Image (cartoon, rainbow, N blue to C red; front, top):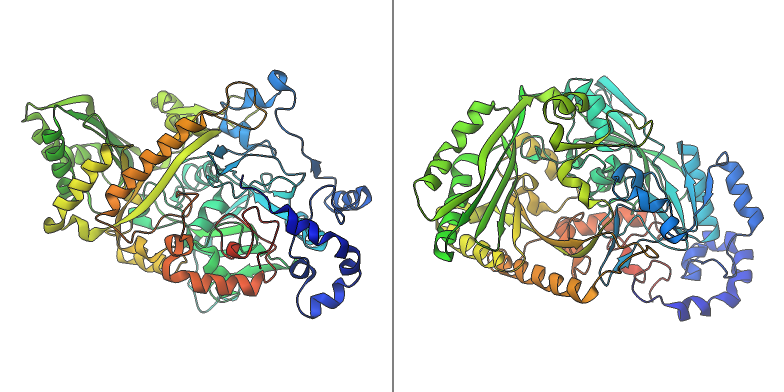
Length: 601
């Protein structure tokens, strides 16, 4: 964590008793008490709630107030050690996060207390308590945030994991929108639900599709608020663009409905403005779509025998993408690595296995016709009825090696993670950067500079092109919906999001075993930086995806939201004028020190 500004906080302490007595006047005068104090209180400081006040909160939330302790206080005997291989178990522990930290940035530390919310009234009580007592407030559902936005020591946590009810609608019309919007199929999801819960209800049992994330343990609400891309976003757009309505607890403790006609600016801000900045979302309603006949995937790894051959392979892959894959059917990744290696793993929708094989045949034939390439993982395409993509019982029977179930006793049978995602549980980030790549780079006259940039990027840490995280090539209706969100406008014209990253094993504070090698982490972060520098030669003004980006991004307002930031800032001033909600590089966070405890100026 960055060093705390304790001196400024300490300077306000003698004024606390006076300010607390005059809180009502301040709320109607120059500003609220939080603004006047310019700091939030920590345990042991004057103003920290007394035991009796915590007991009152506990009564208000039906006993669901938890005093959190460091999860590894018992050393090798700590129960949390046994959980780290299971992301569902990690997510079920309010003292843990799915990311253990980021080198030289932050490390996962539990809040002082957590409200294990089971309903909206619990959230209201927590928000009011934090506001009245000037506490640092944190909100956590899935807990996947790479930048630690759901984590802060000395805080009160609103933990929404147990708010996970889901309801399907055949003909949903948002509140106040009768006569203005046609009824449509939708799903309402409480804030603590994970995407596996949503897919299980909507697709496996409901026979429809909801646009969500690829990792099954990610929280629905957090993903939607940050934009939200899944494997098939090139067809159905972002999760945020399909939000129809939200229920939100704002900083004043009011429960508000937000949709296109009721609190429209709050609604717009929730669609990609970043989680945890505007309020606590308690429920979201998302449109659903008809399922295609098939969902599927393919994989192929190719190694070139020289740099010259690798450059030619990159050129062919880029042009093949433009010719055959730059359309709503295809998503996911091509990865350009050192060692002259191209690793392709893509998903498709609306195509059969045979059609997918026919699509790829020209590229595979091109590789086979040349002696300077070795296929280290043969081409394979698989397809299944779309309703079974997240059907745990179907996958256990026909593709058991691609999933890992929650193996705890009495765990829901439908809970699984993709085998390739399991090692993210507790991972420690060394470096992570992203950049939107404009579709203009795919034009024949621009491909050579792009190929050169990808080749150079591969010489450092390597880079993945996530084609589903750029909406160029998507249907016009998907692009129109995404245009009416707070997500960076560059996503509309991007053919892919480039990501370079490096991470290591879990490194929670107090965890027994080897501590993270910070010297090595800094070397890896430098390699990521060089990788992205190579790509910025062809995309010098590229923005970043807020959920997958550099913790240390300097011009983050422009990088995350571009021309949308002033409108987001206005929504923040309207619904949270005193900055109760703070997350790292979130809307309005520039007014606070790095830890969110002391207001600047």
